[in-house]
Structures are given as C-alpha cells and as structure tokens.
Image (cartoon, rainbow, N blue to C red; front, side):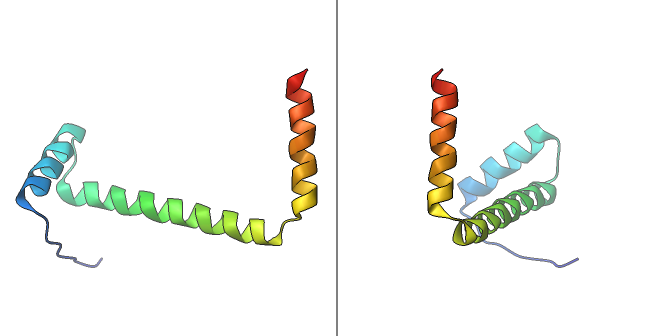
Amino acid sequence: MATMTIRLPDDQHTRLKTLATRRGVSLNKLFEEFATRILTETDAETRFRLRAARGDVEEGLAVLDKLDKHYAE
C-alpha cells in the first residue's frame, strides 16, 4: 500500500474530517472511497467513449427512433 500526503486548506480538512466522522469512517477510508468512486467513473466513461467510437451513428439513431415510437404509444 502506498502513502500519499496532500495539502488542504484548514477549513476543507475540518469539513472532511466531520464528514468522515458522520459516516463512521476514518479520514483515510473516506479518501479511499473518493478515489474508488472517481476511478470507477473514469473507467465507465472510457468504456462508453470506446464503444461510441466503434458504434454506427445511423443504427444508434434508428434505435432511438424505435424507442420514441414505443414510448409515445
């Protein structure tokens, strides 16, 4: 496991410490959760962009038109 030092303004540190306490976790665990969340979001965006690059625009629009017709009824 790696160690990382970050510098935050005192007010942010206080607020984050309060948030961690309310959630019942350590400040370290709170940052671990933040890191996990942003990495998961980034991975999802990357997968979406890769699929979008391989996709067919006309086929995608046809699917959306089909959905519009289905839900308009």
